Picture 1 (cartoon, helix red, strand yellow):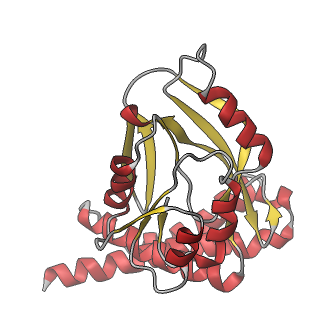
Picture 2 (cartoon, helix red, strand yellow):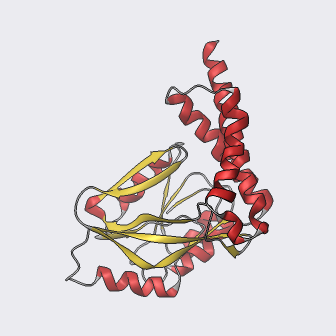
Picture 3 (cartoon, one colour):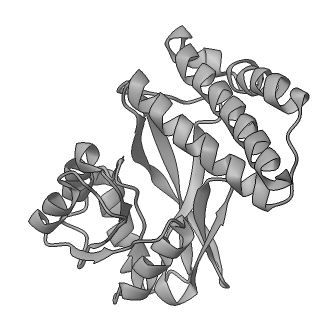
Length: 246
């Protein structure tokens, strides 16, 4: 688990894996809140990371783990009891010949579960250490397995990513700036179209095309938030482009 100022959600996340984890690895990116104290309370092995790349922070976690099977969580994710039992079942079944498992996620917005609008997804987060590989793209990191067969578990990880309007927009601002920089490093140029039309397309894609409206009108601020993040991304990219010209 990689962390930075995650005290708000870390307790619940670590408590959810207490009965299934032989070891807990926390790679902290310089928290100034109670994140490290909470991690210590749960007898985690804590490693400090002073860099800025999520991929490198995740790689440290992979290298420090000693067990054959790894479950990768973010600090705002919770493993419910049914999923815990399922995880223990598959990793201890010698007849299973898989090197990794995808797990579906149940995202929550203001404590309410979402099922549409891009929030119904799965990720590779349970895998054998020797086959694990971490990658990063556009403000997100993800895991793959180098070889072998993969499968998917039935139960879901609960993801409490959007806990309040203010927290959500702080998060989207940070992500937008990070993605703008990644696009700049990738050689992309900003434009009027990208700054003003891409955000509109983002909202339409999530709320209309991907049927976000099925979750209810309460999620409109969330999809406006994604549009805002798209706006911040390309405004940031334009600043990076201008700075490079000087």
